[in-house]
Length: 116
View 1: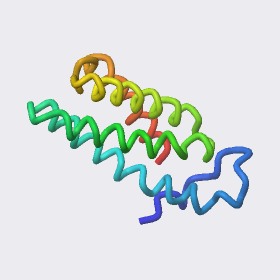
View 2: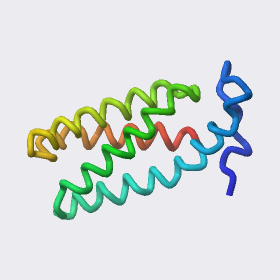
View 3: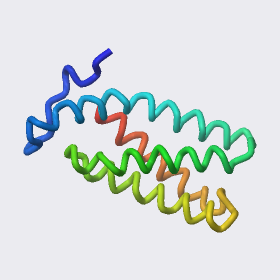
């Protein structure tokens, strides 16, 4: 299913980036579902390290391309989450700031849902 069929390219985005934009939009639903599943696993008390690491990796991918494709706010949100999660992972306490990172992740998911 091509979710981008009804979406316009962001203002000012060169036509040459249409394919990358379409891939980004089409992957957005999958990334939302992945992040949601990982946060549910964390909420159920599963070992948080792998889930937090995977959320950080997904956030990294989003941050790396969102701004280029005309979604700088989404990119900035993802980058902030990635950096905060990586700092907590590096400190050996992947959930030490979850009380503030969890809501930031929800805000990112809401922003991503607005894209599709």
